[in-house]
Image 1 (tube, protein in one colour):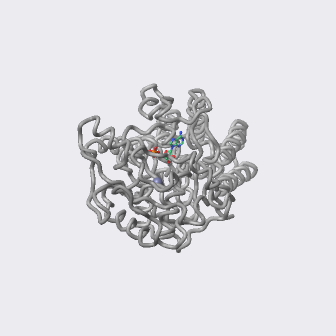
Image 2: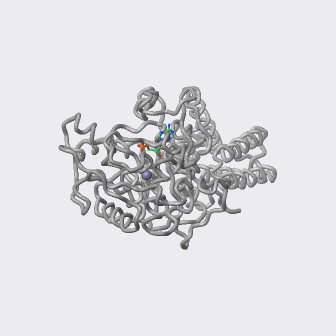
Image 3: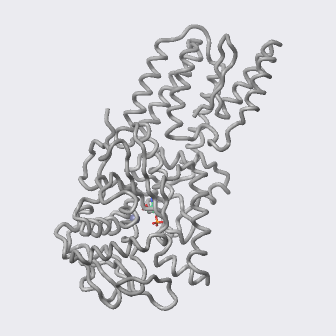
Length: 465
Ligand code: AMP
Ligand code: ZN
Protein backbone atom coordinates (compact mmCIF):
# COMPACT_ATOMS: atom_id res chain seq x y z
CA UNK A 1 0.00 0.00 0.00
CA UNK A 2 1.25 3.41 -0.91
CA UNK A 3 1.75 6.41 1.30
CA UNK A 4 -0.94 9.02 0.76
CA UNK A 5 -0.81 12.64 1.81
CA UNK A 6 -3.36 15.40 1.71
CA UNK A 7 -2.02 18.12 -0.56
CA UNK A 8 -3.35 21.59 0.28
CA UNK A 9 -2.59 22.66 -3.30
CA UNK A 10 -4.90 20.11 -4.96
CA UNK A 11 -7.14 19.76 -1.87
CA UNK A 12 -6.96 16.02 -2.34
CA UNK A 13 -5.35 13.06 -0.69
CA UNK A 14 -2.76 11.97 -3.24
CA UNK A 15 -0.36 9.04 -3.52
CA UNK A 16 3.09 10.30 -2.58
CA UNK A 17 6.44 9.30 -4.10
CA UNK A 18 9.59 11.37 -4.26
CA UNK A 19 10.11 12.90 -7.69
CA UNK A 20 13.79 11.98 -7.89
CA UNK A 21 15.02 8.52 -6.91
CA UNK A 22 14.48 7.50 -3.32
CA UNK A 23 15.28 10.79 -1.63
CA UNK A 24 12.44 13.01 -0.39
CA UNK A 25 13.23 16.71 -0.46
CA UNK A 26 11.28 18.60 2.18
CA UNK A 27 11.21 22.21 3.29
CA UNK A 28 9.66 23.30 6.58
CA UNK A 29 9.20 26.86 7.74
CA UNK A 30 11.20 27.04 10.93
CA UNK A 31 10.81 29.24 13.98
CA UNK A 32 11.12 32.99 14.10
CA UNK A 33 13.57 33.25 16.95
CA UNK A 34 12.46 36.29 18.93
CA UNK A 35 11.15 34.36 21.92
CA UNK A 36 10.68 30.83 23.25
CA UNK A 37 8.46 28.72 21.02
CA UNK A 38 5.18 27.56 22.58
CA UNK A 39 3.71 24.08 22.39
CA UNK A 40 1.44 25.23 19.53
CA UNK A 41 4.52 25.86 17.41
CA UNK A 42 5.89 22.57 18.66
CA UNK A 43 2.80 20.72 17.48
CA UNK A 44 3.68 21.69 13.92
CA UNK A 45 7.31 20.65 14.41
CA UNK A 46 6.21 17.37 16.03
CA UNK A 47 3.97 16.59 13.03
CA UNK A 48 7.02 17.07 10.81
CA UNK A 49 8.90 14.58 12.95
CA UNK A 50 6.19 11.95 12.40
CA UNK A 51 6.24 12.70 8.67
CA UNK A 52 10.02 12.20 8.58
CA UNK A 53 9.95 8.98 10.54
CA UNK A 54 7.14 7.46 8.50
CA UNK A 55 8.81 8.40 5.23
CA UNK A 56 11.91 6.61 6.43
CA UNK A 57 9.79 3.54 7.16
CA UNK A 58 8.59 3.79 3.55
CA UNK A 59 12.21 3.20 2.58
CA UNK A 60 13.11 6.72 1.48
CA UNK A 61 16.05 8.88 2.39
CA UNK A 62 15.47 12.43 3.50
CA UNK A 63 16.89 15.78 2.59
CA UNK A 64 14.93 18.00 4.91
CA UNK A 65 15.58 21.71 5.26
CA UNK A 66 14.15 23.73 8.13
CA UNK A 67 15.15 27.37 8.22
CA UNK A 68 15.71 29.61 11.18
CA UNK A 69 14.15 33.03 10.62
CA UNK A 70 16.72 35.21 12.35
CA UNK A 71 16.03 38.55 10.71
CA UNK A 72 12.48 39.85 10.65
CA UNK A 73 10.51 42.82 11.99
CA UNK A 74 9.61 41.30 15.37
CA UNK A 75 13.23 40.28 15.96
CA UNK A 76 14.52 43.73 15.05
CA UNK A 77 12.06 45.40 17.40
CA UNK A 78 12.82 43.01 20.28
CA UNK A 79 16.62 43.23 19.86
CA UNK A 80 16.47 46.99 19.69
CA UNK A 81 14.33 47.12 22.85
CA UNK A 82 16.92 44.89 24.56
CA UNK A 83 19.74 47.07 23.20
CA UNK A 84 21.71 44.17 21.65
CA UNK A 85 22.62 43.20 18.07
CA UNK A 86 20.09 40.82 16.46
CA UNK A 87 22.61 37.95 16.28
CA UNK A 88 23.19 38.12 20.02
CA UNK A 89 19.47 38.43 20.70
CA UNK A 90 18.43 35.47 18.53
CA UNK A 91 21.17 33.08 19.69
CA UNK A 92 19.54 32.38 23.07
CA UNK A 93 16.26 31.45 21.34
CA UNK A 94 17.89 29.33 18.68
CA UNK A 95 19.62 27.36 21.45
CA UNK A 96 16.38 27.10 23.43
CA UNK A 97 14.52 25.88 20.34
CA UNK A 98 16.99 23.06 19.79
CA UNK A 99 16.83 22.11 23.47
CA UNK A 100 13.05 21.87 23.17
CA UNK A 101 13.32 19.77 20.03
CA UNK A 102 15.74 17.45 21.75
CA UNK A 103 13.49 17.07 24.79
CA UNK A 104 10.61 16.21 22.49
CA UNK A 105 12.83 13.85 20.49
CA UNK A 106 12.23 15.74 17.28
CA UNK A 107 14.84 14.61 14.80
CA UNK A 108 17.01 17.40 13.55
CA UNK A 109 16.43 18.04 9.84
CA UNK A 110 19.47 17.35 7.67
CA UNK A 111 19.95 21.06 6.93
CA UNK A 112 19.05 23.95 9.23
CA UNK A 113 20.05 27.19 7.52
CA UNK A 114 19.84 30.62 9.12
CA UNK A 115 18.34 33.39 6.99
CA UNK A 116 21.23 35.77 7.73
CA UNK A 117 23.66 33.27 6.17
CA UNK A 118 21.80 33.37 2.85
CA UNK A 119 21.44 37.03 2.00
CA UNK A 120 23.32 36.68 -1.35
CA UNK A 121 20.85 33.98 -2.51
CA UNK A 122 17.97 36.25 -1.49
CA UNK A 123 19.40 39.19 -3.41
CA UNK A 124 19.86 36.99 -6.46
CA UNK A 125 16.23 35.87 -6.23
CA UNK A 126 14.98 39.47 -6.10
CA UNK A 127 17.10 40.14 -9.16
CA UNK A 128 15.54 37.24 -11.05
CA UNK A 129 11.99 38.22 -10.06
CA UNK A 130 12.64 41.81 -11.13
CA UNK A 131 14.18 40.68 -14.40
CA UNK A 132 11.12 38.54 -15.10
CA UNK A 133 8.97 41.64 -14.73
CA UNK A 134 7.20 40.87 -11.47
CA UNK A 135 8.68 43.49 -9.16
CA UNK A 136 8.97 47.26 -8.81
CA UNK A 137 10.92 49.66 -6.68
CA UNK A 138 9.31 52.28 -4.51
CA UNK A 139 10.85 54.40 -1.78
CA UNK A 140 14.02 52.27 -1.70
CA UNK A 141 12.06 49.01 -1.21
CA UNK A 142 11.30 46.38 -3.85
CA UNK A 143 7.80 44.94 -4.01
CA UNK A 144 6.22 41.97 -5.74
CA UNK A 145 3.44 42.99 -8.11
CA UNK A 146 0.62 40.53 -7.53
CA UNK A 147 -1.36 41.68 -10.57
CA UNK A 148 1.53 40.48 -12.77
CA UNK A 149 0.54 36.86 -12.11
CA UNK A 150 -2.53 35.11 -13.45
CA UNK A 151 -2.56 32.36 -10.91
CA UNK A 152 -1.81 34.27 -7.71
CA UNK A 153 -3.83 32.71 -4.88
CA UNK A 154 -3.88 29.14 -6.20
CA UNK A 155 -2.91 27.62 -2.86
CA UNK A 156 -5.37 29.42 -0.63
CA UNK A 157 -7.90 29.91 -3.45
CA UNK A 158 -8.85 33.29 -2.17
CA UNK A 159 -10.75 35.63 -4.38
CA UNK A 160 -8.09 38.19 -5.39
CA UNK A 161 -10.45 41.05 -4.64
CA UNK A 162 -10.89 39.73 -1.10
CA UNK A 163 -7.19 39.23 -0.44
CA UNK A 164 -6.71 42.70 0.93
CA UNK A 165 -8.63 41.94 4.09
CA UNK A 166 -6.22 39.12 5.00
CA UNK A 167 -3.01 40.83 4.01
CA UNK A 168 -0.78 42.46 6.53
CA UNK A 169 -0.26 46.05 5.55
CA UNK A 170 2.80 47.32 7.35
CA UNK A 171 2.83 50.96 8.24
CA UNK A 172 6.21 51.39 6.60
CA UNK A 173 5.01 49.90 3.30
CA UNK A 174 3.22 53.00 2.18
CA UNK A 175 4.95 53.00 -1.20
CA UNK A 176 3.08 50.02 -2.64
CA UNK A 177 1.12 50.41 -5.89
CA UNK A 178 -1.45 47.95 -4.65
CA UNK A 179 -2.11 47.11 -1.00
CA UNK A 180 -1.96 43.39 -1.84
CA UNK A 181 1.63 43.62 -3.06
CA UNK A 182 4.27 42.42 -0.66
CA UNK A 183 7.82 43.41 0.03
CA UNK A 184 10.77 41.48 -1.37
CA UNK A 185 13.51 43.80 -0.19
CA UNK A 186 12.86 46.32 2.51
CA UNK A 187 14.75 49.63 2.53
CA UNK A 188 16.79 50.02 5.69
CA UNK A 189 15.91 52.58 8.28
CA UNK A 190 18.33 54.19 10.70
CA UNK A 191 19.72 51.81 13.27
CA UNK A 192 18.28 48.70 11.65
CA UNK A 193 20.43 45.84 10.37
CA UNK A 194 20.92 46.09 6.64
CA UNK A 195 22.85 44.56 3.77
CA UNK A 196 24.08 46.17 0.57
CA UNK A 197 22.34 45.14 -2.60
CA UNK A 198 21.89 46.34 -6.20
CA UNK A 199 18.49 47.67 -5.07
CA UNK A 200 19.99 49.69 -2.23
CA UNK A 201 20.75 48.87 1.40
CA UNK A 202 18.05 46.87 3.10
CA UNK A 203 16.94 43.49 4.33
CA UNK A 204 14.95 40.60 2.87
CA UNK A 205 11.21 40.23 3.29
CA UNK A 206 10.19 37.20 5.34
CA UNK A 207 8.53 35.36 2.44
CA UNK A 208 11.62 35.79 0.31
CA UNK A 209 13.82 34.16 2.95
CA UNK A 210 12.01 30.82 2.67
CA UNK A 211 11.91 30.77 -1.14
CA UNK A 212 15.63 31.45 -1.39
CA UNK A 213 16.69 28.90 1.22
CA UNK A 214 14.36 26.20 -0.12
CA UNK A 215 15.70 26.57 -3.65
CA UNK A 216 19.32 26.88 -2.50
CA UNK A 217 19.24 23.43 -0.91
CA UNK A 218 16.45 21.56 -2.70
CA UNK A 219 16.40 22.92 -6.24
CA UNK A 220 13.70 24.86 -8.05
CA UNK A 221 11.10 22.11 -7.66
CA UNK A 222 11.03 19.83 -4.62
CA UNK A 223 8.70 17.32 -3.00
CA UNK A 224 7.05 18.64 0.14
CA UNK A 225 6.66 22.01 1.84
CA UNK A 226 5.24 22.05 5.37
CA UNK A 227 4.12 24.57 7.97
CA UNK A 228 1.18 25.45 10.19
CA UNK A 229 -2.14 26.36 8.53
CA UNK A 230 -1.75 30.00 9.47
CA UNK A 231 1.19 30.20 7.06
CA UNK A 232 -0.85 29.12 4.05
CA UNK A 233 -1.86 32.71 3.37
CA UNK A 234 -0.07 34.96 2.77
CA UNK A 235 3.31 33.37 3.53
CA UNK A 236 3.12 30.22 1.41
CA UNK A 237 1.10 31.87 -1.31
CA UNK A 238 3.81 34.50 -1.61
CA UNK A 239 6.57 31.90 -1.58
CA UNK A 240 4.88 30.27 -4.58
CA UNK A 241 4.43 33.60 -6.38
CA UNK A 242 8.07 34.61 -5.93
CA UNK A 243 9.62 31.26 -6.70
CA UNK A 244 7.52 30.34 -9.70
CA UNK A 245 7.76 33.78 -11.26
CA UNK A 246 11.56 33.60 -11.00
CA UNK A 247 11.96 30.03 -12.30
CA UNK A 248 8.90 29.41 -14.46
CA UNK A 249 8.62 26.00 -12.75
CA UNK A 250 6.38 24.57 -10.05
CA UNK A 251 7.83 25.22 -6.59
CA UNK A 252 6.70 22.52 -4.10
CA UNK A 253 4.76 19.47 -5.36
CA UNK A 254 2.96 18.84 -2.07
CA UNK A 255 1.92 21.44 0.48
CA UNK A 256 1.19 19.91 3.85
CA UNK A 257 -0.25 22.01 6.66
CA UNK A 258 -0.66 21.18 10.32
CA UNK A 259 -3.80 22.37 12.05
CA UNK A 260 -3.56 24.47 15.15
CA UNK A 261 -3.25 23.65 18.77
CA UNK A 262 -6.10 25.46 20.48
CA UNK A 263 -6.81 26.58 24.01
CA UNK A 264 -10.49 26.93 24.86
CA UNK A 265 -11.31 26.97 21.16
CA UNK A 266 -8.77 29.69 20.25
CA UNK A 267 -5.43 29.28 18.49
CA UNK A 268 -2.57 29.10 20.98
CA UNK A 269 -0.62 32.25 20.16
CA UNK A 270 1.88 34.55 21.76
CA UNK A 271 -0.25 37.53 20.88
CA UNK A 272 -3.25 36.11 22.76
CA UNK A 273 -1.18 35.26 25.83
CA UNK A 274 -2.87 31.82 26.03
CA UNK A 275 0.28 29.81 25.53
CA UNK A 276 2.52 27.38 27.38
CA UNK A 277 6.12 26.73 26.57
CA UNK A 278 7.64 23.30 26.96
CA UNK A 279 9.53 24.62 29.98
CA UNK A 280 6.27 25.78 31.62
CA UNK A 281 4.81 22.29 31.38
CA UNK A 282 7.95 20.49 32.49
CA UNK A 283 8.12 22.81 35.53
CA UNK A 284 4.57 21.78 36.33
CA UNK A 285 5.77 18.18 36.49
CA UNK A 286 4.72 16.86 33.07
CA UNK A 287 7.21 14.72 31.19
CA UNK A 288 8.44 15.60 27.72
CA UNK A 289 7.24 12.13 26.63
CA UNK A 290 3.65 12.91 27.61
CA UNK A 291 3.78 16.24 25.80
CA UNK A 292 5.20 14.60 22.68
CA UNK A 293 2.50 11.94 22.82
CA UNK A 294 -0.27 14.51 23.25
CA UNK A 295 0.98 16.59 20.31
CA UNK A 296 1.23 13.71 17.86
CA UNK A 297 -1.66 11.46 18.90
CA UNK A 298 -4.17 13.66 17.07
CA UNK A 299 -3.60 13.59 13.29
CA UNK A 300 -2.11 16.79 11.94
CA UNK A 301 -5.17 17.80 9.93
CA UNK A 302 -7.38 17.94 13.00
CA UNK A 303 -7.35 20.79 15.46
CA UNK A 304 -6.21 19.75 18.90
CA UNK A 305 -7.61 21.40 21.99
CA UNK A 306 -4.96 21.57 24.69
CA UNK A 307 -6.09 20.59 28.20
CA UNK A 308 -4.31 19.32 31.31
CA UNK A 309 -6.69 16.36 31.30
CA UNK A 310 -5.41 15.56 27.83
CA UNK A 311 -1.85 15.63 29.16
CA UNK A 312 -2.73 13.31 32.03
CA UNK A 313 -4.37 11.02 29.49
CA UNK A 314 -1.19 11.00 27.40
CA UNK A 315 0.89 10.09 30.47
CA UNK A 316 -1.54 7.26 31.27
CA UNK A 317 -1.38 5.94 27.68
CA UNK A 318 2.42 5.79 27.83
CA UNK A 319 2.23 4.03 31.18
CA UNK A 320 -0.10 1.42 29.69
CA UNK A 321 2.40 0.78 26.90
CA UNK A 322 5.32 0.55 29.31
CA UNK A 323 3.43 -1.76 31.66
CA UNK A 324 2.69 -4.04 28.76
CA UNK A 325 6.33 -4.05 27.71
CA UNK A 326 7.42 -4.85 31.28
CA UNK A 327 4.85 -7.59 31.48
CA UNK A 328 6.27 -9.25 28.39
CA UNK A 329 9.46 -10.01 30.29
CA UNK A 330 7.64 -12.73 32.23
CA UNK A 331 4.72 -13.37 29.90
CA UNK A 332 5.97 -16.39 28.02
CA UNK A 333 4.04 -19.38 29.33
CA UNK A 334 3.35 -22.57 27.50
CA UNK A 335 2.81 -23.04 23.82
CA UNK A 336 2.62 -20.34 21.19
CA UNK A 337 -0.88 -19.11 20.50
CA UNK A 338 -1.74 -18.75 16.79
CA UNK A 339 -4.62 -16.43 17.66
CA UNK A 340 -2.20 -14.03 19.44
CA UNK A 341 0.11 -14.21 16.40
CA UNK A 342 -2.80 -13.30 14.13
CA UNK A 343 -3.68 -10.35 16.38
CA UNK A 344 -0.14 -9.02 16.25
CA UNK A 345 0.00 -9.38 12.45
CA UNK A 346 -3.32 -7.56 12.16
CA UNK A 347 -2.18 -4.73 14.45
CA UNK A 348 1.14 -4.39 12.60
CA UNK A 349 -0.69 -4.07 9.29
CA UNK A 350 -3.24 -1.62 10.67
CA UNK A 351 -0.51 0.48 12.26
CA UNK A 352 1.27 0.81 8.93
CA UNK A 353 -1.89 1.34 6.90
CA UNK A 354 -3.12 4.08 9.21
CA UNK A 355 0.11 6.02 8.87
CA UNK A 356 0.07 5.44 5.12
CA UNK A 357 -3.34 7.06 5.08
CA UNK A 358 -2.29 10.70 5.49
CA UNK A 359 -0.47 9.99 8.77
CA UNK A 360 -3.50 8.87 10.71
CA UNK A 361 -1.70 8.64 14.04
CA UNK A 362 -4.92 8.09 15.97
CA UNK A 363 -5.68 5.01 13.87
CA UNK A 364 -2.14 3.70 14.37
CA UNK A 365 -2.41 4.12 18.14
CA UNK A 366 -5.85 2.51 18.13
CA UNK A 367 -4.40 -0.59 16.46
CA UNK A 368 -1.65 -0.87 19.09
CA UNK A 369 -3.97 -0.43 22.07
CA UNK A 370 -6.50 -2.91 20.69
CA UNK A 371 -3.68 -5.41 20.29
CA UNK A 372 -2.45 -4.80 23.85
CA UNK A 373 -5.96 -5.49 25.14
CA UNK A 374 -6.14 -8.86 23.39
CA UNK A 375 -2.53 -9.75 24.27
CA UNK A 376 -3.11 -8.94 27.94
CA UNK A 377 -6.05 -11.27 28.09
CA UNK A 378 -4.06 -14.01 26.35
CA UNK A 379 -1.28 -13.52 28.92
CA UNK A 380 -3.84 -13.59 31.77
CA UNK A 381 -5.04 -16.97 30.62
CA UNK A 382 -1.54 -18.36 30.09
CA UNK A 383 -1.88 -18.60 26.30
CA UNK A 384 1.08 -16.52 25.19
CA UNK A 385 4.20 -18.40 24.07
CA UNK A 386 7.78 -17.29 23.35
CA UNK A 387 7.05 -16.49 19.69
CA UNK A 388 4.11 -14.34 20.79
CA UNK A 389 6.44 -12.39 23.07
CA UNK A 390 8.82 -11.75 20.17
CA UNK A 391 5.94 -10.59 17.96
CA UNK A 392 4.72 -8.25 20.70
CA UNK A 393 8.20 -6.78 21.08
CA UNK A 394 8.48 -6.31 17.31
CA UNK A 395 5.23 -4.39 17.28
CA UNK A 396 6.39 -2.16 20.13
CA UNK A 397 9.70 -1.61 18.34
CA UNK A 398 7.86 -0.53 15.25
CA UNK A 399 5.54 1.69 17.29
CA UNK A 400 8.46 3.40 18.98
CA UNK A 401 10.31 4.09 15.73
CA UNK A 402 7.47 6.50 14.98
CA UNK A 403 6.07 7.62 18.32
CA UNK A 404 9.31 7.40 20.34
CA UNK A 405 7.86 7.64 23.83
CA UNK A 406 8.52 4.19 25.22
CA UNK A 407 12.22 3.93 25.68
CA UNK A 408 15.03 6.22 26.78
CA UNK A 409 16.42 8.43 24.02
CA UNK A 410 19.41 7.06 22.10
CA UNK A 411 21.83 9.37 23.97
CA UNK A 412 20.78 7.88 27.30
CA UNK A 413 21.32 4.24 26.44
CA UNK A 414 22.42 1.85 29.12
CA UNK A 415 26.16 1.27 28.56
CA UNK A 416 27.09 -2.19 27.22
CA UNK A 417 29.28 -3.03 30.27
CA UNK A 418 26.39 -2.35 32.62
CA UNK A 419 24.10 -4.59 30.54
CA UNK A 420 26.62 -7.41 30.52
CA UNK A 421 27.10 -7.06 34.29
CA UNK A 422 23.35 -7.31 34.81
CA UNK A 423 23.11 -10.34 32.50
CA UNK A 424 25.78 -12.08 34.61
CA UNK A 425 23.93 -11.15 37.77
CA UNK A 426 20.71 -12.52 36.27
CA UNK A 427 22.41 -15.81 35.36
CA UNK A 428 23.65 -16.10 38.99
CA UNK A 429 20.17 -15.36 40.29
CA UNK A 430 18.68 -18.05 38.07
CA UNK A 431 21.29 -20.55 39.21
CA UNK A 432 20.33 -19.75 42.78
CA UNK A 433 16.66 -20.18 41.71
CA UNK A 434 15.96 -16.57 42.66
CA UNK A 435 13.60 -16.11 39.71
CA UNK A 436 12.02 -12.97 41.09
CA UNK A 437 15.41 -11.25 41.01
CA UNK A 438 16.20 -12.67 37.54
CA UNK A 439 12.90 -11.45 36.14
CA UNK A 440 13.35 -8.13 37.89
CA UNK A 441 16.64 -7.59 36.05
CA UNK A 442 15.04 -8.48 32.75
CA UNK A 443 12.16 -6.06 33.41
CA UNK A 444 14.50 -3.30 34.43
CA UNK A 445 16.52 -3.68 31.24
CA UNK A 446 13.37 -3.83 29.11
CA UNK A 447 12.12 -0.61 30.67
CA UNK A 448 15.49 1.00 29.88
CA UNK A 449 15.34 -0.03 26.23
CA UNK A 450 17.36 -3.24 26.24
CA UNK A 451 15.91 -6.52 24.97
CA UNK A 452 17.29 -9.84 26.18
CA UNK A 453 17.02 -13.07 24.24
CA UNK A 454 17.78 -16.36 25.92
CA UNK A 455 19.04 -19.33 23.97
CA UNK A 456 20.91 -22.52 24.87
CA UNK A 457 24.13 -20.72 23.93
CA UNK A 458 23.52 -17.97 26.49
CA UNK A 459 21.76 -14.63 26.68
CA UNK A 460 22.04 -12.16 23.84
CA UNK A 461 20.95 -8.55 24.09
CA UNK A 462 20.17 -5.67 21.79
CA UNK A 463 18.92 -2.11 22.09
CA UNK A 464 15.24 -2.13 21.36
CA UNK A 465 15.44 0.71 18.83
P1 AMP B 1 6.51 31.14 13.89
O1 AMP B 1 7.71 31.03 14.74
O2 AMP B 1 5.46 32.07 14.42
O3 AMP B 1 6.84 31.45 12.43
O4 AMP B 1 5.78 29.72 13.89
C1 AMP B 1 6.46 28.50 13.71
C2 AMP B 1 5.49 27.42 13.28
O5 AMP B 1 4.48 27.18 14.27
C3 AMP B 1 4.71 27.77 12.01
O6 AMP B 1 4.68 26.63 11.15
C4 AMP B 1 3.33 28.12 12.51
O7 AMP B 1 2.35 27.88 11.55
C5 AMP B 1 3.19 27.16 13.67
N1 AMP B 1 2.18 27.56 14.67
C6 AMP B 1 1.99 28.75 15.26
N2 AMP B 1 0.98 28.71 16.17
C7 AMP B 1 0.51 27.43 16.16
C8 AMP B 1 -0.53 26.72 16.88
N3 AMP B 1 -1.29 27.31 17.81
N4 AMP B 1 -0.70 25.42 16.60
C9 AMP B 1 0.06 24.78 15.68
N5 AMP B 1 1.05 25.38 14.97
C10 AMP B 1 1.28 26.70 15.21
ZN1 ZN C 1 8.46 29.96 5.41
